[in-house]
Length: 283
Image (cartoon, helix red, strand yellow):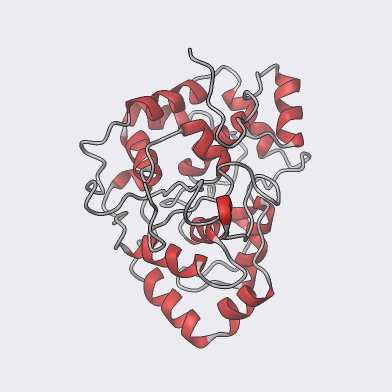
């Protein structure tokens, strides 16, 4: 399916990133809005924002397998262990995160997720009054204190979160995954991180990732299972949604540090990525 440029699409790196697994700023070729792209939100004529009627059985089952793994709690604990080289809780605990503007602290916070805003984007986000005004206007339409499972936020293509993603990713020096991670910094309880690792591990229908996470955590039993994985000492600012994201990422990341943790815990690594155009062996 062709992905429109005005949908939250082009999760860079469906075939791998140029700068690690967290993303980059390239918006052309397989890293851009057309080929090799996955939209976290469907077009509004394809489904309601509730996810009702969508076939989520397989992606939800894949998440169950990850969350219910005996090593899941240890994987999460390793990610948030300050002695290890992961972002940990910095995305959520660094100060300077007012609800209705993007700050220098926000741009620094997302660097822990292996993305960065280049100079032109920094100038736009911090110094361009028109950009700052439009960003603030859209942020004011996105709930500040809402968890994703509450279900009232508009995840449609025309909703404010989608509009803000589209606007940010079109700014020079930003890009799609970086825009997504800015949104996650601003609304960590509501908007999940969707990068190449999440796409590969969850493997949801194109355009449904926000709805898949919402559906998963709206299930009380599943949500309690995720919350039970929270390390006792973890800062309460880290939301349940982030716990879910982390266990999926630690299970599937091919980065050196995640591989080392899995080796230490005896957790299997994900299978090698298929080359572009290569088909998996028949089951």
